[in-house]
Image (cartoon, rainbow over all chains, first blue to last red; front, top):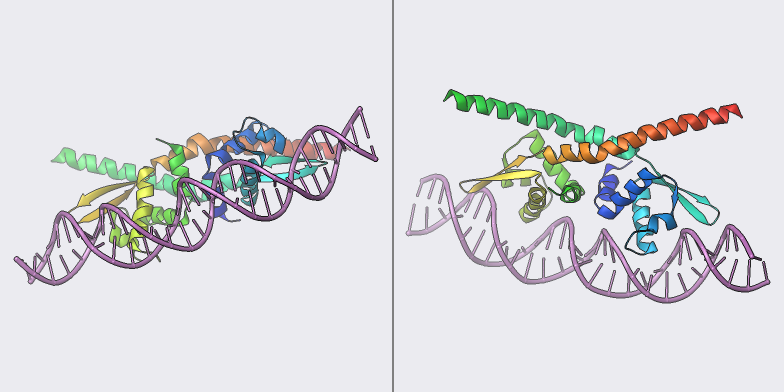
Length: 107
Length: 107
DNA sequence: GGATCATGCAACCATTCGGTTGCCTTTTCA
DNA sequence: TGAAAAGGCAACCGAATGGTTGCATGATCC
């Protein structure tokens, strides 16, 4: 699974909004996800295709409608594999800041 | 601070690579950050400008050179404010899965 | 002072992206 | 069976993006 696809999928506010809506209520159809969005159905379809390519959304055809399901795992993976390193960087920065402050106090 | 700028800044692999390089060694100059990159100095400059606009990188002029410093805070904020919700979604999905499995076993 | 090194600025270019319009297919249901 | 509902497909468009080249500016060092 490519992390790059996930990062790029999350880059657009419309797509993050769609994820949030699925998080609020899972299994929504395309028509439902279009409601309240200020763009055409085709635009929403494209956004959902990007999310699906990033494995953030899974779909299921039910008769003439298509249900969409959130898959939060790629987001978790990014949090663990990528963001975690910057948690350590933050702590290192704090340590450095503390050391600098103490040096300044000594002068 | 706009989360959108951060998400968009993280969308490009070249920019994530630059962040990783600054995490490995903070305070590098533009020239140092260009080494090993397969693009021109101007391209790197543009990427750094995007990172700076997202507040992920801070700069300091030192004579004729420019030092770049990583700021991991926006990444932390995204982790806490945005990714956190999907942690809860993941747990909910697991609970749902467990329930479904138990239902299936009962049949 | 003049060469050189590090960076800045601006124009330009191809590609991608987000979005639209128009039309087609499939399912549902009276 | 035929109309309406849900969605798919493809072409097109403007703007943003990622990248380049060429030149200008400001420090540094001999």
